[in-house]
Image (cartoon, rainbow, N blue to C red; front, side):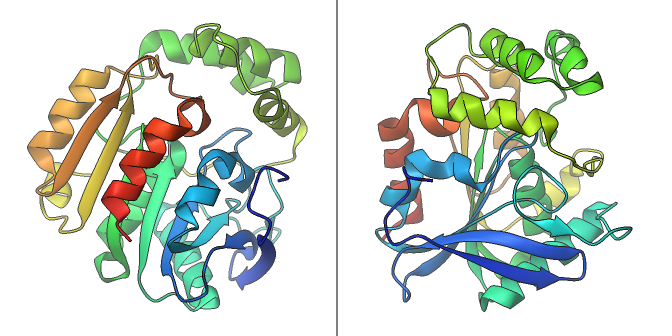
Length: 268
């Protein structure tokens, strides 16, 4: 968190599913921007490479997913179990923050949540950006699932590191980010909500402007297939593929390139 802006403050927002931990920064009168992290060991802290630039013009809210690694505290026996539950949880967080309408973005699993929320609550989402979202437009590659299986069955720091080094192609990784991912292996978390990809007819009816940024070196899925399907389904989508960037390293591996895309899309 030392890599975040100095004006960052942490707030806790009560919801029917538990208390949600949110990192907040940026001008109080700026347009609200909500950031959702990926799954696994990712938390709100993983947005450190983009927080300062985005917070110049937006009131930034980066939250820890309820029940996932991080500082959000779920109610025992009341975890989200369906997409509708996730939408109700996010509704509760936005209500607690006093943000009736927001720009919304997510990486990986967070992108899946963000897209489903935009489809279910279109009046609350002005602009939507998706960073290499999973299970939105195509399924996982078999090789990706096979390499992830040991980590998923019994997560340990060593297995997390081995998997990330494979997916990122052995490129140098931020040691702080890698430590954060390893720490998530021992975190008590609940089973994440999963489900089918959004229906094509629902995607065709999405009116929000969408920025889809894909990792050119992602081993998660067929990047060009995802770009083609999204372009054929979403009526207002801008798609770009960032070369030489992997799926898991996307939020921090190319901060300048990613920052230009995001600030250009989100506007002043």
